[in-house]
Structure formats: C-alpha cells, structure tokens
Length: 301
Image (cartoon, rainbow, N blue to C red; front, side):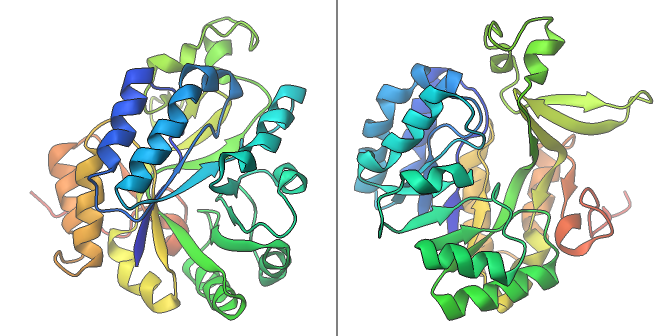
C-alpha cells in the first residue's frame, strides 16, 4: 500500500510552508498533493514557491499532484482553477466545477471533498478520466470495500483517509474572521494564528470540532492504525496522511513502517499518545458507531 500526503489544509508562514515540502523529499511517501485547498486569499503568500516545491519533490522521486480549491465562488478563483492544468502535473479536483477546465482526455485525480459514495458516481468519474480517487472520510469499511472493488474493475486506484483532522464541511462564510469581529473580505488572515485549526468546545467545555477559516474539521485526529490490514484486504491502494504542524515526518515514518510490517497494530497510536497525550484519536467512520469514536480503549494505568 502507498502513502499519499494530502494538501496542507492550514495557513502557515511562507518559510514554514517551503521547509515542510522540502522535508517531505526525505519522507518515505509515494505521492504529494500540494496547492491551496481552502482559501484562495492564502495563495499569493506562497504561490511563487510551488514550482520549486514540485521540482524538488519530483527530483526526490515523489509523484506530485496539484489540488483545486474545495469551493470555487469568485471569477479569479475560476481563473486559478483553469490554470492548474497548465502547470504540467496531474490535477486533483476537490470541487466538480474544476472538471470543465481540464483538457479533454487528460487524466485526473479526485480528492476526498468530492462525494463519491457509490459505484455509479465512481463509474461516471472514471468515464471522464479519473485515475485515482480518495474516498470521502466518512465512509464505513463495507462501503470502502465495495468502492475499492469497483475501482479495480475500472482501473481507478482507491485511497482512504489514514491520518489527520477530518474535513467535515466547507462554507462561504469565514468563522475565523467572524470570531475576530472582522469581515471575510477584511479577515487580516486570522487563521494564521492556528496552524492546526482552532478548537471549538461545547458550552460544557467539551472538545467538539475545529475551524480553519471557511472549513470545519474534526476535533479528533483520524488514525487508521488498527484498520490497515482490513483496508489492504479490501483492495485500497493508498492511505492519505494530512499535514500537521509538528512531528509530521515522524508520522510518515510510522505509517510506512506499519505498512511494511515492521510495526504491529497499535504502535502508531501508542507513540502518538506518548508524544502528544492531548491528541484525541478516532477511527469511528470506518468501524465505529460515530465518526469521533475510537475502536480501542487505552490500557488502564
């Protein structure tokens, strides 16, 4: 099974962004998706560094892919989307409005924000040229298996969300700006204060979700540690790891070792708990009663 690094969902300083993708050249991963997924206002801060990152990652042997925006609403965003295919690398669409901008006959990938919930949708996307689909993270294991089987018949590789805060919703409104009593057009980039998203708690002070500009994320970090064998048996070809601001290279190595059989089930979760006790893990969309649930209770002290 391969490892794919999804696009960074957060707004990081330019130098941090560059250092992150430079470091991925040494990480044991197969594919890197980069570019702006959430908010087009962030793109000018690092847009000129994308060609260098693509070249560096390709030289390191990684397959490179450019993401589309998750929500295209403005004229300049339509123009940016239309220009993606001119970069000479594969495009991952995360909004179906990107499809008309792709040259006819050009293969493309589909990201997890496109609702591929059944074989009919998968078959339709394959007929348009989809070569790889990362399934929406809220699908249960039985649905993943059915879609992986259909993908194999159609020559479409199937990915599953393996690690990281789960993308739950995207909005036309910016929660970060509103929290700081600013308008979306004058947000002053409030989201740069929260490199892994801003935690949201209930009135009872319980962890609930996280916000990232116009995006809503899970509070917990998805972790497919205990489901890797089942996903491989179902025919899933790759796990997707979502960037986070700390220890990400180590996260990549842990998943690589786990996929190669060098680590037992539970080793990834155990190390995350040791190094970051406050991190809440979940695998409930795959196997639990709710998305935020975790299939394995921690051992008693």
